[in-house]
Length: 235
Image (tube, rainbow, N blue to C red; front, side, top):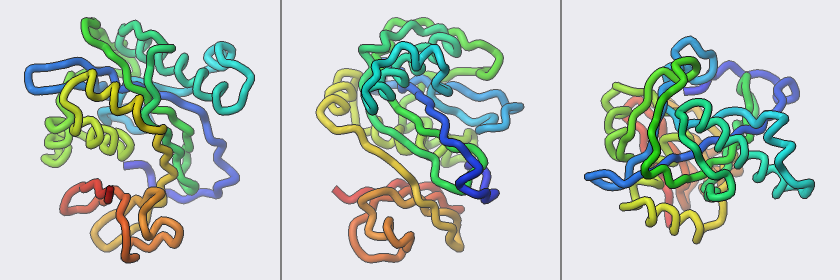
């Protein structure tokens, strides 16, 4: 989990970033490429994540000068570049499908504005860079979630929530169709510490505006408790 050391929100610039769920069809359903960050890295060292990283100046140069479209286009370029650098997968930036957008909440020492995309990576050969990334794993969403529950691997909250979404899709085509049909989900988490852990509230949760996890009404949250992690969303 991210560091809980609170800092002034004004101290921390929000850095643009991008990541990509590289998908293929496996024997037991859709599989996604997870990569392990080197344990020596300060940010999520040792965690299993999707390929990705910060948006570089060169990525921005590939964008178009029109607000949100500019931001998304630069993020697409960054996602494809990071996938190539970290895993050797060659992805077409224009073919990526936007899935969600996450902004790190105030109070953390590093804040990111991160686009999540999905990509068809069937037929691609993976070779990790052995620098920032030291291992990779093609996994079904359920297998990764189960290994996190057993304490075998670490998953950042946005990765966990994305895996839950993917677990409801049977094939690459199903995932692509679902992402195309939906609007981009935007997350600005509001984490609340409880006696059993942390409840991260998302927009649409009845307690989101008041940061009250006990508020009656609809649920949209990730419960990161000592008893286990659970994503709750009323539809």
